[in-house]
Image 1 (cartoon, rainbow, N blue to C red):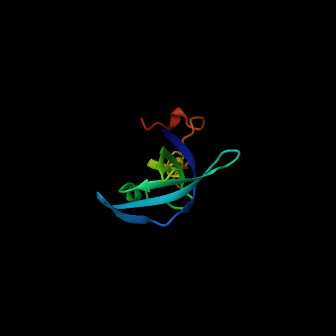
Image 2 (cartoon, rainbow, N blue to C red):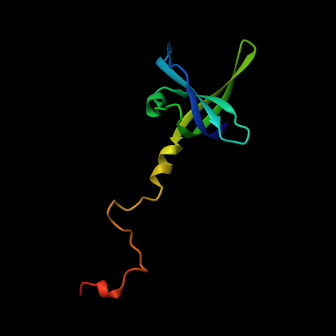
Amino acid sequence: MSMELKGKVIQILPLVTGEGKKGQWKKQEFVVETQAQYPKKVCLSLWGEKVDQYSLAVGDMVNASVDLESREYNGRWFTEARAWKVDKSGNSASSSAPTAPPIGEEPYNSSTSSTDDLPF
């Protein structure tokens, strides 16, 4: 099952590493708080090279694509929310904001220009 989750990174848990049948592995878990009327906290995990690919920090606003998977172990079920893509939404918002003209320059205003200002 795949879904998207938007929210703010409120905690980054310690990096976990280990040795498996296929070699060394690493997992980074982080907690996201949703921005809904009733915010929820969700612990997500990044595995392998995705840990380095998405360097997260507390306070980052993210949009995470997540796969949910449950596994049975000794008669109990465990569910993991594994993030496979993380977009930092806070970074793109600042680049789309309108920019002010450079200091010392007036913005172009068609109502103040006249045809008498033409150089020819």
